[in-house]
Length: 203
Image (tube, rainbow, N blue to C red; front, side, top):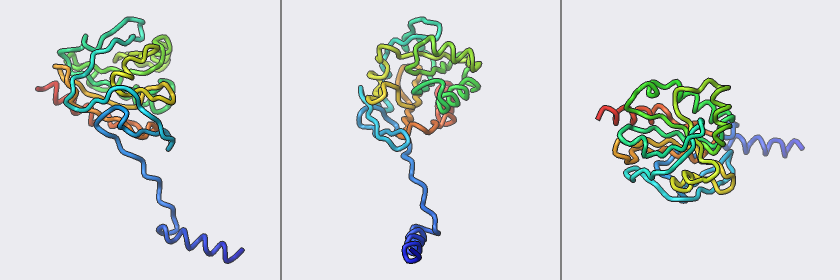
């Protein structure tokens, strides 16, 4: 018993200071689609749909606002669009991300549109926004058609949810920034996306 204990301690020390190093979390990537490897708490997941990269034209799709209106992304042409994609409102990381965007100074600008897209039905989005006090930017639903998820390469095959990502689209409808989280339990770098949106709005 004593020998076995000493062997375990020696093994831990060999790893470095007697501590097991933390598991490295994969960083975000600047593209979407099936070639992007994603996971949730280490469980591998698969993206389906079209692959998109910075410099591609942003596809025009129809979504449903939390008021129940049909909205096309092309309706925001002429504005810079910051598009936050979250799996499910009502979960901690999605809630923090969406609430943080609603407090952003970008929501008060007429030349920037801040949008959050999820697979929640629009009535569920409406209830969540009312309960959470989110009112300064638009939430849009991809339920039940999944057209956005397929077209933007952000639909998770195993869950039917959307992958966590942020895109910035310029006034001409060209994608200028993509951050797809490879580990869906992590928050995106909203400050970086907001900086790109502000720079594009000044151009």
